[in-house]
Image (cartoon, rainbow, N blue to C red; front, side, top):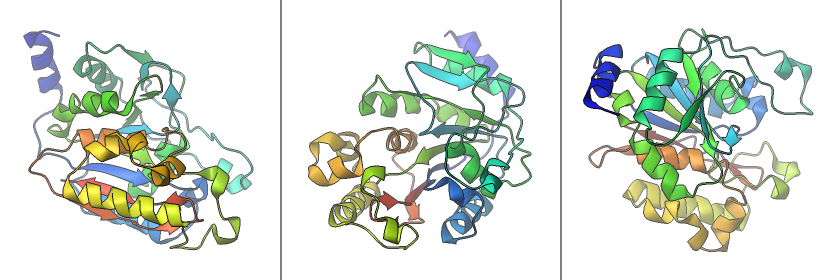
Length: 275
């Protein structure tokens, strides 16, 4: 990328107040159609920040070999789950895409190869939370995929290259769950707020302390931190969106937690706001 490329990117969006960054614990797809304290937390987060020009979402559910960005005019609503009520499959979130923002994202992330995608759309990691924040579906949304061949430090460093978008009214959202072990769900307490196995309680407490202290390296190197995080993060797909969010934090910015609860023994809804 040369100086002219950077100037062109700068001119496409006017400078705005720096947008916050969010990590949203999205939990069950049923949160898309239920009324509970967590969806109320998503709405409150939207009310407390400026209305964005567009949204770039890094969702746990677009986990790919290589990196892709959605670049279609009208992304489809993807129902990437099974076994749920018809009412959930009937949900549509017809937000427009933003091909220009997709192209700018490709340029900003160079020399990392990012390919424009015209087939994916918005998966439930994106639309199930964004629909509560912006129910009119009037804000363009694009998704950036997570390259599963790369380690957490790579994703943390890659996210830093997106910082310029924050100055142009782009809301960057990571959507996943810090504690996410579907094999160990306590189904009797799937809707019990505060229900967590001992290892899940420890994982929540330790990660929360690291987050609030600004001590991100143990979070990035989660595989070195003991069995509590091995249980909490059996696979990195839902965890890595948090890493992208943390990579976008300036040293002077405040970090706050919300929706900070365990449910079902092995899931956390803990969400993060930066800025």
